[in-house]
Length: 233
Image 1: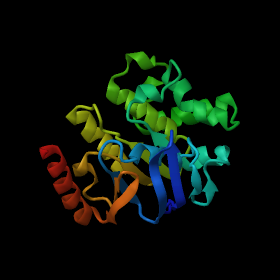
Image 2 (image 1 turned 180 degrees about the vertical axis):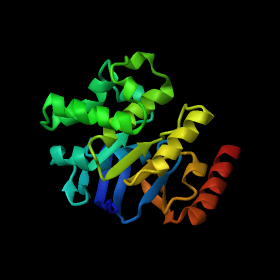
Image 3 (image 1 turned 90 degrees about the vertical axis):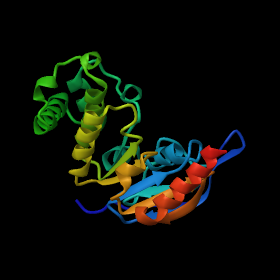
Image 4 (image 1 turned 120 degrees about the horizontal axis):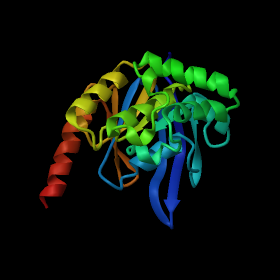
């Protein structure tokens, strides 16, 4: 799978007359991109804009040429968002229903959608989860179900919003290993600087603006120093 191109053209977003993002223009051509910043810097808002879940006040967003806000059918087949909390994403009682939902939403017959859902469960060694109740799964297992419900749509871009938050170390390592092996372009929103040290690009947001945009080796030392200064006050 080739690199998925994200383009933001002079994007701004205001909530209640408060600027969350301001005149943001970005073009990405990298395979692994991180977006970092303190709470309230606009990171999660940017993730939702890229997925077409919210509309900018100004400007527009495209992913591989798809207008993710206007063309929702193509958007869900182009980009998928993994939420920080899987319970904010899961809506069905069983694993098979959850994973097949997106396929059914774009018009695939239930039998076809279920077959594809079982196929991806099998691919990840979880076929026996098909009829399992979501409430019986651990936090890490629910995270995996959410990831598989995205991957079954074969998106070219995965947007990960704090994917390791709340996970224990073994589960975090397992999920990180799965993500590392994926062919999709990944944009990760995170506070966990260790998890993105090997990424191709790091974008540091500060109050809705790009503070620095370069390799992690260049950006992370400056970001860590700035955060230490802030929290030392």
